Image (cartoon, rainbow, N blue to C red; front, side):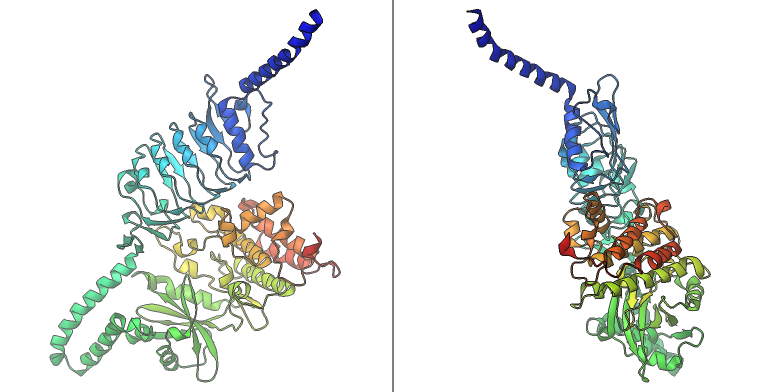
Length: 592
C-alpha cells in the first residue's frame, strides 16, 4: 500500500518541483529584466557587447543599466558607442520608469518603436548617429517630461509630427541630418528652435530655417523669393527708365536695351533655352591664372554667350557644368556658381587666386574664371573620362581591379597633397565619387577642392551644400558641422568602399535595412564576411590586395577621428601593401 502511494505521489512531486522552478525563475528575472533580454536579443549578435544573462539574479547590475535603489525598476539605459547592430525592440516600451535612454553612436537600424511613448517618465532620449529609418513616432509627443531629444544623423523620413510641439519640458531638440520633409510645425515648443536643430534635411521648410513653404509643402528658399522680388523691382525700374529714355541719350538707351534683354530672357526665355548670355550681358571680365588660357577675354565671352542646356555635362552641389569648346579644338569644363549674397565678392577673388595657383598631377587644374554680376564661371580642364560616379554606376563597361586601385591611389595622392603639401593646406569637405574625375587613361583628378570653404556660411561656418552629401560624412562632422582633415579621411574611406563594392554609399539595398555602406561593412565584419563587400563584376581581384585595402578603409571610417590615419599614411599603406600583392593569389568569389 505504501509503495503504491509513493508511485502515485511521485508525478505530483515532479510537477510541484517544476512549478517551483518556474516561480523561482520568474522571481529572478523581473519584467524589466525580461524586456531588456528581448532588447539584447534584437541588437547584440555578439554576446560580449552586452553580457547580460538570464541567470543573473539582479538585472540592475547589468552593463549600462541603472535602477532605482528602492523599487529596483530600470531608470537609465546607457548603451552608447558599443557597436550594437540590429533593431530597437518594442519591449523597451515596457520600461515604465525609464528616464534616460542613450543608444547613440551604434549601428542600429529599423524604426524608432512607437511603444517608447509608453515610457512616460522619460526625460532624455539619445538615438543619434545610427541608421534608423522610417518616421518619427507621433507617440513621442506623449512624453510630457522629456527634456532632451536627439535623433540626428540617421535616415529618418516623413514629416515632423505636430505632437512634438506639446513637449513643453523640452530644452534641447536635434533632428538634423535625416531625410525629413515638409513644413516644420509652428505650434508649441518647436517654434523655439532654430536652423541648427534641422540642418541637413533638404526637404524641410518653415520659418525656423528661413525657408518659405510652397502650397504643396515643399521648401522655397529665400534666394528664390529674393529673385522674384528682384525681378519685380527691375520691372518697375525698367518702366521708369523707358519713360526717361528720350532725354538721356543714345548711350543710356543701349544700356537699357541690354538690361531689358537680360530681364526678358530671365522672365520668358528661360523655359525654352537656358543660356549663359544673361550672365555676361550686364558686363563680365575674364581672370586667367598664369597664362593658362591662350585666348582673349573677348573670344571667351563670345563663346560663353553661346552655351545653353545642350552643353551641360553635369550638375553637382556647387552648380551646373558646361562643355566649353573653343574654335581651335581645345575643350574646357565650365562650372557655374550663382552668387549667394552681397558679400560673395569680398573674398572670392582672393580664394580663387589661391586655388588657381595649386598645380598637382592628381588635382583638377583651374585655369581661370569669368566674373559676372550674377554668377561666377570657373574654367577647368576638361577630362574625357567623366567622373568616377558615372564609371562605377552608369556605364555598362565595368572597371577592372587594377583600374580601381589606380583610381583610389590617385585620389589619395591628390587629397594628401591638399592636406600636407600645398600652401595653404586645404580641407576638401566634399570627397565623393562625383568629385573624382578621370582622364583618358583612367587616372584620377580630385575636383571641387576649396569650393566648400568658398561657399561657407560666414555666420554658422557650416557648409550646407556639403552637408547634403549624405553617406560620405564623418559622424562628428554631422554633429558639429566642423570639418577637419580627419573628416576628409572618413569620406575617402567611404569612397574606397564605394569603389570596392560598386555600390553608392546610400544604395537602396542598404536603406531598406536602415544602413549605409559603412553600416553594411560593420555588419559583414561581425559575420567574418568582409570580403563579400567586393563587387562581383570586378575582374582580376587579388585576395592580398583586397584584404589590405579593406584594412585601410576600415581604419579610415573609424568612428573615432583619432584612430584614422593621415592621408600621407594612407598613401604609404596603399603603395606598400595594396599595390604589391602576391601575383598568384587571385580572389575567386565562388571559392568562399
